[in-house]
Image (cartoon, rainbow, N blue to C red):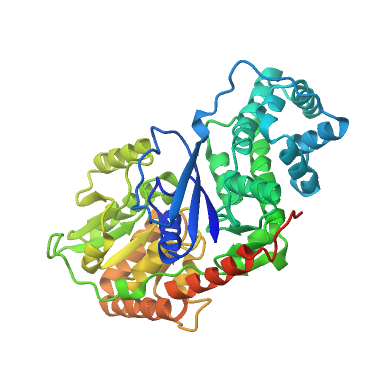
Length: 478
C-alpha cells in the first residue's frame, strides 16, 4: 500500500506535536510506503529536515507557498458560461451554498491552467462585480490584488503534479485539505482527513489579530478558509477527530457527522514512565517546565508574566522552556525582551532537546496556548507522572480532568486563556500542596495507560488504512 501524507507547515521541517505524530505513523507502519506532500513557507525558513526520515518514506515533495510568482505572461483561457459561474461561486459564494462537485470537476479539467485563469478576464470581471456589490471604499485594484494574493498560491498548488498513491491522507484542512481533495477527485482514490486542531478556527483567530490584513478584508479571508475546509469535509471518505468537542466544531463547520470518528492521540507510555534524572539542571530548585514551539499561538509571554509573579513568591523557582526557538525569530526576541524588561531571573530557553533527559527533574509542567487540539506534550508529561497547569483550550480540560476516561480525578489544573495571575496562582497552589501534586502525577499516569496508549491509536489507523487503501471507498466523491 502507498499512502500520500499531506502536511501543512509542519513535517518534516518544523518540530512539534503534529510532526511527531506523522513521524510515529511513518515509523511504526514500516510495511506501508509513504509519500510526504509538504506545504511550506519558504526555502529559507523550511529547508532542513528536523527528523530522521524512515526508509519507507519513498519521496518528500515540497511546495513553498511563499515562493509563488505571479509572473508576467499568461495564456488566455476561454471559459464557458458554466465555468465562469463555477469560478464565481468559489470567489464570492458562501461556503454552505457552493456546489463542491462542480468546483472539483472544474479543478480537474483546468488543473494545468489555474494560474492563467486567475490572471484572466473572467476572474477580473468576477472581482469587479463583487467589488461593486460590496460598495467598498478601497481602490478596486487593491481589492483585486488581495483576491489574487489569496487564490494564486491555492491555484499554483492545485496545478502541481499529483503523486501516485492508493490513499491520500491530509493532516489538516486548509491548503493541505484542498490539495488532498483535488488529488482524491482527480485520481479516484479515497481521502482520509485527520484534524488535530480545528484549522478554520485557528486561522480565524490569526486573521482577527493580524496586522497584515485590513479590516475590510478580514471577513473575506476567514470565509476563504471556511471554503477550503468545506471542500475537504465533503471529499473525505472518513474524517477523524481527537475528542468530542472538536467533533462538534467540525459538524458546525459543515462536516457530515456520519463521516466523523474519534481517535485520540496516544503516546509510548513505557518510554516515558520510569525515567531517570540525567542531572542536567541545578539541584535544589523548583523546576517548572514547558514543552512547546516558541510561537505566538503558544502564548509564551503569558507564561513569562506568570513566572514573574511566581518568582516573587518562590525564589528557588526556575522556568525551563524546551522546544524550537527558530520558527518565529521575531516572537522569540520579543519573549527575551520581555524577560529583560521585567528583570526576571531563572528563565532558560533550552531549545530542541530530548525531553526524556529533563522531565524527571521537573516538578510541574505548563502549557499557556491560546489554541490547541489534544496536546502530545500533556500526554507525554502525564505518562512521565508530571502534573500540568494548562489553559482551557482544545482537550486540555478533558485530559487533565478525565472527562472521557474511566480514571477520574485531576491530573493538573486548568486556567483561563491569557490570564497570567490565574496561572501564577495555580503554580503556587501546586508548590504549597506537594502531596496533591504527587497524586495528580499518579492520576495522569493511570489515565494515559487507560485511554491514550500509542498502540491503540495506531491500531485504529491501521484498520482505516486497510479499509480505505483497499478502495472500499474509491472513485470520485462529492
